[in-house]
Length: 198
Image (cartoon, rainbow, N blue to C red):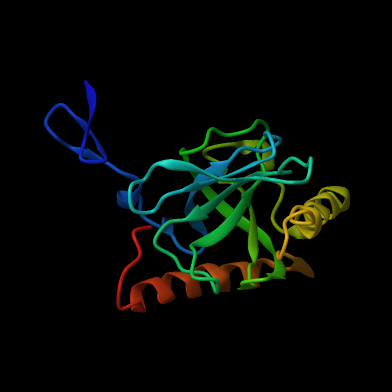
């Protein structure tokens, strides 16, 4: 039986089930966990996991009538340049539910800057054991240029109607840069004096 206690989910025997307990991955930076916050092709709502409680909050309703082109989430126990966990865009055959964890591998990364600073997005697919559909995709060159353009266009314009917010797309970079972003994110998290709850 599942029940809630003090903001955490517990099973009979009081074993904790919390997003804070999800590790960064099994073989970083090649095999990493992504906690999904926003499903692909969902409504124009920006969801964000509250790192303290583990609850999924509505961060904001987007002013633009656009849908996220991929599942959107983060790698737990990492810190990006912006002080949030490393962001990941996950390509899947169907949208994933917010709050699920999926094991992934990187294909590359979209470098971008917004009003808060660097805000790179790792592009990933599930590992082959989870979904063999993308086994042939090893790098950005294996992803349709149309899909890459669609993703870049979304992030270039999704804040257009939000006053005081902006995005500059700096371009796509390869898998080595994505791996470095993940590795650096783990190091930043581990070196943080106060560990954020994610």
